[in-house]
Image (cartoon, rainbow, N blue to C red; front, side):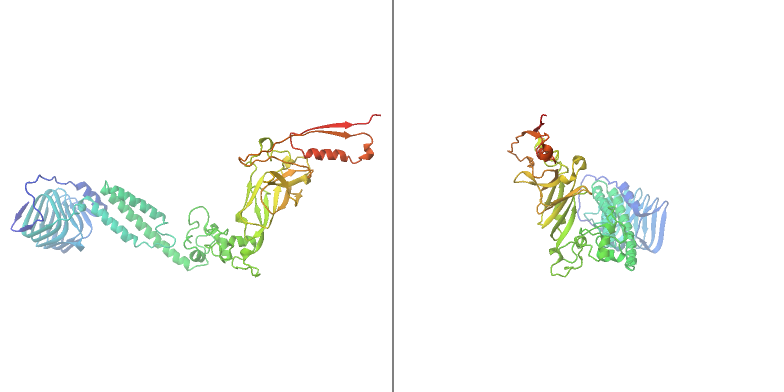
Length: 544
């Protein structure tokens, strides 16, 4: 470094140190400057009283600035020489100015220079001819010549970040936050639910990863983020204009989902978008959604005038959907005006089972439907292997478990007869039975009936258990099944009977038993026996 006729202020001085290799940042600088720069493919000269450079430039050749005042920021990159013939050279808006000559010299001829940045000529000479030179930054060159009255060069800890791209990435981040502040988010598109924002966040993550190894790639990705933000901004600006048009037409249906514009804007502003047929993209139109899970779709809530975001609009303890099913008014606490709120009234409801024709009519206070369960227990309940319930010759239906988490007054159960199991036996002898856990046997319901037309049996009860249908032609017969649920042990011992019938078929029976009651009695007795019992028949015939 050479100095003539002047004073140089150095923060520190080191003597007899080893040479420091010239940093080669040429590829990095050109790569990130090319992202946003004016490019000139030949020598370029700028003349004028006031020269201002705001955007970075790349010149394939020499570049010269002739004028009174030069104010600039960003990067001036030239493959050849960079020359300033001005009175004053300064930073524009106090932002960094980086002068980079790839293979030439950088020459400044002026009276007053005050700027911050970097002067970088790794393969040439930096010559400065000035009265006063003040630089907050660094001069990096193969050779440096300073000619003037006063030179003040103050380095900063982060100066080199202007050359390796870090500073540009940080500036890009700042631009991101500025742009995001201009994005008109609304109730339907927020930073947490917008698809483009998910893409932006993913790109930001990639920027962070790239900054660890490749600053140019990080800057490229950051610029991609800015493009996405601009895209999002334009998208939401257009959406905002549409929303304003929709608000002016409350009775219209812009997206065709059946919901009026005004209803979506006023009642569902945080859940549905009046611009979209299916806001959440789940395949269900907005009109069919049920955000408050009261059993009514948004369309039904719109028709009834109920609140689609409140399961119980009138606050009477019954969900809006329950009131519709039970025939009460979801907008009135006491529909019939009898002094009882709707949830304290007694209702009879029909609850369907797991297969057709299995159903339950139940009477209880309020809506008990969500507390009642009907299970097909045909294959889930274990009985003694030799005598399983549904494998019995007397079983003519599946086995069903009825349960309620709330008390009820009465219930009527309907079960279908398995006509294949019944065969040619009379359906009138089919009975509904329930399992008594204390007696460990099935007991017929006292009040029941058969509907031959529908092939079903009904029975009334005030308690729930396991229910099924048996063919019991002789209801007075004792029919027991040793029953085990799960791993519960049973000490029941089954003893099979050996039965012998002696039936009088002599001629005297023509007038003693003209209706064959003896045969009917024997048949009914046999029907009351369990499989495994041995039965024999002997006939008495009078001899002539």
